[in-house]
Length: 244
Image 1 (tube, rainbow, N blue to C red):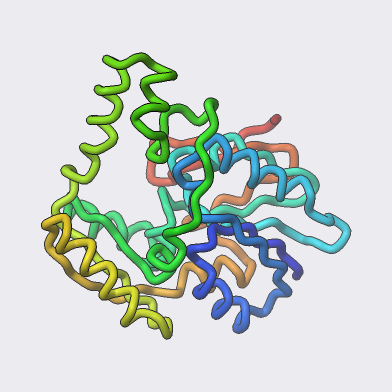
Image 2: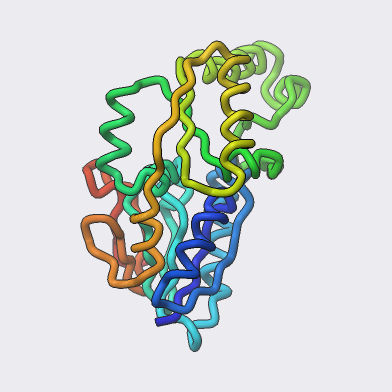
């Protein structure tokens, strides 16, 4: 089986390790981390990669993404199945299962998660377009010009408030060579923001199964050709619907 993998670059190290051990033939296309702040642009660019797939040499297209602020919702499978892990975001991939992520999320509310890739690729940003809405990369002056001073002040304060919603930072150790360096950078960010710092072991199993083929319905959504992705308000996280 030959698969095209379209994934966020924060998974680069883990994907390369899993690809080296996978029984499938893999073509890897990485997308920059900054698309996480731009869900509409993320959807457009990932769809463009799906559309450009050489279907004569590809059996399936696999996404190294979760739902990611609905950036994946609306994607359309073309002539080959589209496979997506059932995850709200990439933290599930680093933890090995949506169940483990859910348990940690509810046991430790207010936690911001770091991985080596998340720290390493922090500098890759994309400008937010008007269709994406007001973004974290917009300056106060840009907001004033677009929304007026009163609205800009509210939006600016609202954007800054996300930091206050977190009280802890957890570094997910995936066992990569750069973990010591990136762990310390994450620890420094936590100290600067007054967050408690903890560390947990990551789990490669979900990423490995994602690249191995034979995707089970419990952990992967397989979107048939001509169907599109829709957010689901249940444990499945997303589902496929017919039509574009």
